[in-house]
Amino acid sequence: MKFVTVSGPPSSGKTSVILKVIECMRNSVEKVGVVKFDCLTTYDDILYKKAGVEVMVGLSGNLCPDHFYISNIDDCVKYGTERGFDLLISESAGLCNRCSPHIKEVLAVCVIDSLSGINTPKKIGPMLKFADIIVITKGDIVSQAEREVFTYMVRETNPGAKLLYVNGLTGQGAYELSSCILEAASTNTLDGKKLRFTMPAALCSYCLGETLIGEDYQMGNTKKIPFQQTRNSVEKTWKDFEETDQEDRQEPACIDSLTIIGGQDKSGEKENVKLTIQAGEVICIVGPTGSGKSRLLEDIECMAKGDTPSKRKIEIEGRHLEESRLVAQLSQNMNFVMDASVCDFIKMHARSRKITQMEEVTEKIIQCANELAGEKFTGNTAVTQLSGGQSRALMIADVAFLSSSPIVLIDELENAGVDRGRALELLVQKGKIVLVSTHDPILALLGDKRIIINNGAINQVIETELAEKENLKIMRQMDNKMLALREAIRKGEKIGWNMSDYFVLNEFEKEGNL
Ligand SMILES: Nc1nc2c(ncn2[C@@H]2O[C@H](COP(=O)(O)OP(=O)(O)O)[C@@H](O)[C@H]2O)c(=O)[nH]1
Ligand SMILES: [Mg+2]
Image 1: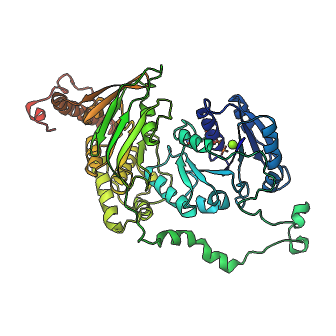
Image 2 (image 1 turned 180 degrees about the vertical axis):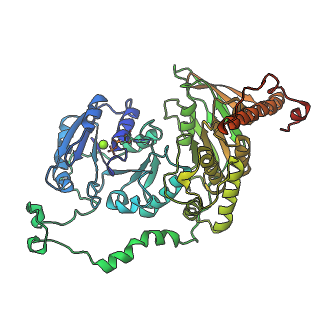
Image 3 (image 1 turned 60 degrees about the horizontal axis):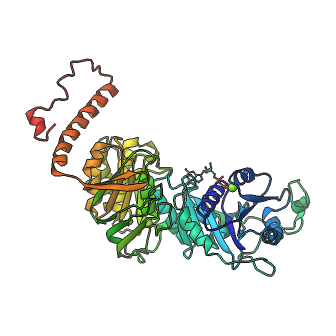
């Protein structure tokens, strides 16, 4: 039986990720069991049962949950073997953050979410530090910049681990994790195996039920805070971060081309496609809702090797491909969650990328974001106070100038007050491959090519014609007119005037002016 330990802070997405991984393994693993450790209560067993997964629950109650875990885990493995499981996964919350359930020679996974704050990787210590695989969840909610800063902090804490990004809601990235789990070693007993990290020592009066506070009641193994020392160490993490050695900067990955090799559609019919996209090209992905646009983006993100439901293969030509994450993502539900000014925010991202011309690049990004958004903001504005359009514009400018990823996936960049044409131009100038999934006809024609998706497969690839590009000019004029109306309504103006001629372009406008 294969056995894997999964740990991570509460609500980081462990159960969601495990369920998605099990779903991916349906065809390769017959019997999967989960053992869930918690302290007081859990509802995870309901979710596992609902998914048809056999689950055991261990609640530590008034005992240290980590000591409870290690005293019981071997019995769980033996039980799993008896039950005939092919795979047993243990889920535990790493409740005191001092411990780690990871065992030598047993595949160790740590799940951590990108919303938890950039210092969390250091705070949770051994659970993350001694993991073989670190899964980062909830990347769909935060900006690309925050994801990259967070990743940097994770790497600093555990440079040797494999980093995977999994979305616990959609399952994006779960295939790669399931492939790693399928390669885990088999074990039928943990007898004689060793923990990767010791449990904390305790055995004091409070372990035995004492509740009174005061020196007189403290007996056994206790420890006092050395206050002077603590104050000095509080600011240390930030200082560490700011003083990082600028020397060891890696060359960013550089892609020459990306090839999509067809797999199959939702009915299992062959997808007859081989499409090569060159660096600097913009490709739009269109098709009805649910047709499989996001699946294609996901295949690219995880560099599918025929192992996803679409059976597509993605091949890449380029340099330093192993060095960093290849794909940056921009989507509608992303937000800034850090409490920082625009300036500090960009600098933090620049630092994580070990960029030396910090001031210069910060200024450039702010200027560029202001051009894209129209509504001006300064470096002192808090990122959480930016409007939807301003946030999106800052995210785009930041990805263009600071993100190391050579591929940019944009999911539904609709008209949120951002000059979309200019945004795409900017990304392409930086030599990136840009893929945009959209329902918007203007955005669809802004690409060099558009991919039409139907029933889960690429149905057609259309090169944007010259005549379409000409029409695009008119469509953009119309769009600007709609925007002007939106603006008028926002200012409290009445628009009951005769509008019948408003959308007819005059000669001046036909020339491309407005
Ligand atoms: N937006 C988003 N939500 C997620 C993601 N992963 C998990 N969640 C949500 O986060 C919450 C906690 O997830 P859960 O799997 O129960 O966390 P656990 O306590 O670590 O097992 C649930 O509401 C999930 O739906 C993700 O990648 N993105
Ligand atoms: Mg859980």
